[in-house]
Structure formats: structure tokens, C-alpha cells
Image (cartoon, rainbow, N blue to C red; front, side, top):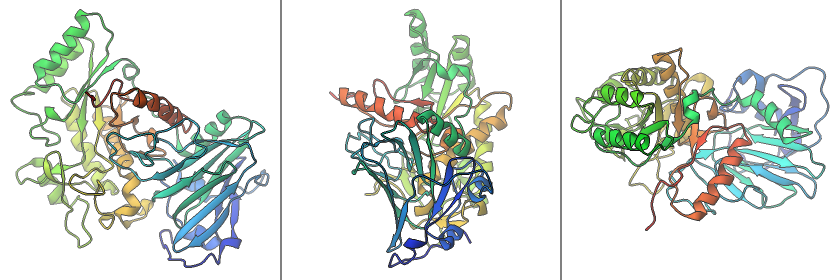
Length: 463
């Protein structure tokens, strides 16, 4: 049964590696053993779980590059040997150079304010490597696990993945070009959602415009100075005490009129929503979630409480369909105010006043069977942001099925491009960060995450 993880103390099964062709010609699934194949957790990256689980029965060739597996103290170590002269790309939203050869990355979604070129974990997790072989052909490699994973590319002839096992490794190719690899990858993990046309225009965003009159002033000034601008973003200060799905009655008393005025001037409006829900009786979102028992729990079965912008907060357990449906309903009601797009922030999930910047790994999620059922936060951490973005996306579709939703997310996992564009997080107003943003978004592109927002110029000002 999926999810029956074991604590291995040796590599006794390392010589029993099995592989099978899946999806289409040139794509292979590798597992440490037949036993591990049966015990592997479900996939969060594949659009269709059956595509990863169903082998092709005919019309395929043998793989050219095969990994080796070791199982040591519960960790599955995977190595793929490649020719001298191979170069590495990918690994998703990580700072540093475009070419990843020589780099080591850890997939663990982290609130990484002010990250630098040596930061090894940012806001999203993408256990994916694109290799360019000396022949010019390209090979893609996916470690299909949501758990914390080390991607070691410090030896140019070797890809190494280390994560708690068991998990499969999927190879794509080698094919004639990187484009061929990415096309095949898209058949597995899906393509970027079709965005509304206006979202491809010019955006104006900063850490809050207060009050609504200031928003109108910004919009008016753009038009007076004939500076192209299509979208204005609203940060959390529009809320009543940072309570999600509320509006500050002093500063944003009539959001419908504000959005109407922006629309009249040719602007769209995007509004922020965080996952942290203020613990306060009488606050309708909190009361509703408590009544329906929708929060992530501590190991002893109580709702987990952590500090974020509103103070003490509880967190929706997006791993369960009941929670996602509830959240989608809240988004639908928010959109009725004329909201054009939703900005999901703090969804690593970020938690203040903790050394880890997130919630305990021992917290409990009561997930759907298709996701792996009841598991601790260690298992679901890296996909929490993606599942929140999915819930938000579904809420926008619920509000108006004839409109293309627009969702932006800070946290994500490989495959989250199906639901949301990516925001590269809290950068600084330095030339170094401008340089880093270029390679970062290019590496997102080479795993089919083609819609993104990098703060230019910039999230934080350095004086």
C-alpha cells in the first residue's frame, strides 16, 4: 500500500532496481525494488496518477541512462552517471547561475527574505534536472517525491538525489533537444494554465497602498503621465486587522466602488490572500473552519496555532477536499467584489517566531486517500502552497466559469503551474538580485513554469 515507509539500515535491495516504460516513448520509471514500487507515495507532480503507475506494454526501447539506488538509514540515495562534458540546468526556483553544474539544492519551501546567491532553499520545490549531453541531446530527470530532497550536482558526470524513501525516479529522454524533453515533461506534469490576456501586461505592485484614495491616486498618475500600466495590486493592508476575506472599513470601506473606478480607468485589480486565519471567535472564517474541523492539527489532535501577520493563526488543511471546497467558496465570495486576480502569499507555510520559519514537521494533515491520507507535515510541507493555489484557482472558476482565473503564488511544487503563476519572493533593491532574478526565471521556464513575477524594482529597498 502506498505510504508504508520503512526504516532501512542497509542497502540490501540496491541491486534489485527495476524499471518500466511509462507515459510515452522515451520515458522510464525507476524504483529501487518491486517492493519499493508498491510502497511509493502518490505523485503530486503528475496530472494523471495512472500515467505514472501504468507501464507501456509495447513499442519501446531500453533506457540509455539508468540510476543506481542505495537505501541507508531510511534515506534513498539515487545516482545517475552521465558523460564527461554534461551540463546541468533546472532545480526550479533557486538563486545562482543559470547553469546548475557544481550546485547543491535542497527542496524545502522556505520563507527566504533577502536570499542570496548561495541560498539552497527558496519558496518552491522542484526536484527536477535538465541535462545537456556532450552530443547536444537532452535528458530530463525527476525525483518524484514531495519530501525534503537534496539535489547534488557538484560532480559534472553525476546527478544525485537524497530523500526519505521509497520514491521513483522518472527519466525523459535523451531526446534530440531540450524542447523535446520539455514537451514530454508537459505531458506528465501539465502545462501552465491559460492566463487572462490582461495579466501579460504591465503591473504595479508594492507593500501596500493605503488608503483606497492612494490607490486611485496611483492609477490617476499613471494615466496623467501616460505610463503604460494594466494592473494594480493590493497587499494585506486592505484587510481588517489582516483578517483574510475582510476589508478595512476605514481605509477600504467600498471595495466594489474602488474596483469599478479602476476598471473605468483601464486597470485590473489583484488582491492578496494568505493561509493564516486569525484565531478570534466571532470572525466568520475562523468560526466556520472550527465548526467544520478544517485546520491542520498538532500531533495530539488539536488545531495548530502559529503567529503570522494577524497574530495567532490556524491554518486550513488543503490536503483534504472538504477544506479545498470550503476555501473555494470563500474565494468565490471575495471575487464578487469585482476582484480580478488573487495573490497567495506566506503559503510555504510561513510561521513567525520559530527557528524553522514554518510549522512543526510533526503536525498532522488528514489528506485525501489519493494524496496519501493522514500524514505528518514533513510529507505535505512542500505541496501546501500548490494545494492552496489549486483551491484558490478553483474558487475563481466557481465565481465565473467564463473567465480565465489568475492566481499568483509564492510557494509551490513542480506541477503548480497548472493553477498559478509564480512570484519569486522577497528580493532586495540591488544589482545582484536583479542578476539573480534572470537565471531564476529562466530555470523555471525549463520545467514549463512560464508565467512568473519577479519584483523589479524591488520588494525591499536597501538604503
